[in-house]
Every structure is written in C-alpha cells, then in structure tokens.
Image 1: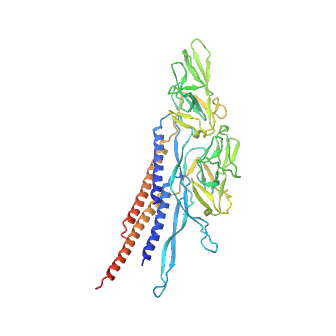
Image 2: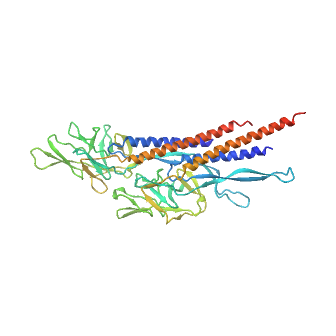
Length: 245
Length: 262
C-alpha cells in the first residue's frame, strides 16, 4: 500500500538532484570551457514477496550517474594575446599544488616571472610536461595551431594538449579543472587546433536547460499530487472500513 | 535545496559581470584605458557517488559517478592590455605609446605609478606633468622661453628657443615595461602600481628592443569596443534572468512539498 508513496518519493529525490544539476549548468552558462551535465535516471526494480498469485514488481526511480557532454563550446574572439581555445578533443595540462590537472579554459597570462599561467596562477605545461617561460620584451608572442609559441624567429615553447581514450576517466575538481581518476594515461591530440585570441564558451544550451527546468518542476508537482491522492485513498479506506454499519 | 544557492551564485556572478561591463562602457572615452573582463570558474563538486566505485561483488564498477556542482564564482577580473587606437590631437604635449610600456609618474606620496595616458601638460615650474599635475619621471623641464617642443619617437625632448637656431635637448622620456602587464594594480586616475603579480618594472628608452615608440600629437584611445560590451551586457542580463528562473522552479518545488497533505 505504501509502495506508491515510496515510488513517488524516489522520483522526487531524483528530480531534486536533477534540479541541482540544471542549476549548476545555468549558473555556468557564461563560464569559459564549462561542459554541460545531465543526470541519468533509470529504474530500480524490486520484486516484492508474493501477496497474490504472481509476484509484484515495483519500479523505483534511481539516478545512475551524471553524464557530461564534452561537445565543443562556441569560440569567442577576445583579442587577448594569451587567450587560447581548443578546437577539437583534448585538454590543456596544468600543474597545480595537488598534481597535474586538465582544463579547457585557455585564459592564460604571464606571471611576474614570465611563466605562462592559468587565471588561478597555475603553470601551463608544454607537450613534454615542463613549464613554459617567455620574455615578452623579445617580441609579440604568436601561438600557432599546434600550440607552438614563437616570438619572431625565436621559439619559446609548445603548449601541450592531452587527450584521454575515455573521458569518464576525468573527475571535476571545480575551477574548470579535471583530475584523472583512472589508470588511463593521457595521449597527445595531434588533430586538435589551438586558436590564439579566442576562448571556448560554455556549451550549455540555455533553451534546453530552461525546458528541462519546466519539466522537472511540473513532474515534481504531479508526483506531489499523486502522493496526496494516495494518502487520501488510505485515509478514506480506514474511514470506510472502520464504520460498523 | 542546493539549487537555490547554486542559482544565487549564478546571479551574483552575472551582477559582477554587469558591473565590470558598465565600468568599461563608462570609460569608453578615457585616454589610455584598458578594458576589463570578469572571469568565472565553476565551484567545487560534491561526489554523491564516485566514478569507479564497485557496483557488485564480482568487481563491476560504475563508469560515471554522480558529481553535483555548487555553482559559479568570479575567478578574477582580467585586464586586456591590447593597444588602443591612436587619435591625432595636434597638441604638442600629447604623447601616445605605440607598443609596450608605461610612462613613469611620481605620485604626491612619493611612489612611482605607471600610466598609458599621455595627455601631458606643463606646470607653473615648467615641469612635464600628467593631467592630474603629477610629475613625469625622469623629470623634464621645458624652459620658459621655448617656442616649440619636439619629442622624438625615441623619447628625446628638444626645444627651440628664441635667439638660437639649433634645438636644445632638455631631457629623455623613459618607459617602464612589465612581464605581466595585466597584473598591475589599478589606482584610478589612469594610474597603475607595480604588484607581485606584475613583476618588477624594466626601465628603458622608447623604441629600443621590447619598448614601444612615442608619437607626438597623438593620444591612445581606450581599447573598449562598444559592440562587444553591449553584446556582453545582453548575455549577462539573459543569464541573470535564467538563474532567477531556477530560483522560481526550486521555490515551486518546495511549495509542492510543503503543501503535501500527508
């Protein structure tokens, strides 16, 4: 009898979590290099002890995981020398206090020592895993499509691009950074082009997020109604069966 | 409900974005102004279910976990130091820097500040000063009987005086460059101060290696592009609205819960 309430509750819990995921997508609609996420909801089937002739099956709603869409975000021109965007697969490698991290956010700049750093000040790594240092007085830096930074005839370094065979190897750390939580080793991504003076916008599609938002809040209300009706059904049952005549 | 606070971080971020954009638009005609950009980063993620956690006794693992993000934050407000366009003014003491470098200015507190605004003038003692009356370093004095002032691209200041056919050199303007110009600390009044992020100032003559050259009779306009700013403003406003929609949806869901008869 109470199963209807529990099934409703299981769906409401996943809907709340879905709203949290949508809220995070919408909050990051303007975050450079952000990748949209969605909650994967499936059914969790329980077989109940047989009360009638055949065993009853109850399907609860259960969230199985968060799917991340690594599709390309739109490229926006900024004109800043050290803004770079990745076109294609792969990530920039960044050396942080917690180890190597990966990011699609290419808003780089030079720090006081002339190292190429992210907006949080962590050094960007080159294709062999070393830091990139350049002296801006030696000429305007030009970053080519393969990541080579040149100043006139001088080559200052090459920005590395790391790719993973399976992107589910990556876990989000916040600050636009991903960490590798698997045994997979990063591989170079020779087909990926680096665009200077551009940044990759968030790939959140506002229309689909707002549509999902409406769906989630309506579904939640419907289930609340269903739970109300179930509750009134049981109170009516008690009321009627309790009458003596 | 987490969605409420997540949407609130989104609204706060867009509010900051609008503040930065409005400052850019307000300074569209400020000499030597460099536009700024609010940079956002996603906040930390909470692991509800870790990717790679075991899903059965026979060693199967979850291919994806459940990570719920907590919203967005402002990482930094970055200054884009690209060259502004050069505007001809005809004023002898207007100087524009074409390329890298800053004029050095002595502030009333005795510190050295840096500026790209080269709309200079002469004070009552004949010294070359900024629009606020702060002296240019190294100090240059224009004699009272000077009839004409010529400033070369390399920064040499020459004056013609009555009774003399050859111009006299009265000083040399020097520029300062920084490894990370975006790391300078803005002081207002078009002035910047050296900071730990900018690196130490490197002083040299204009038009030498790594330094821009001077152009007399020009000023450097701000590098704000009105079209870019207005489109950014529209994006920011719409993003703000969408975040407020999430707040409404979360509120409706909470209302549905609290109205359950039970």
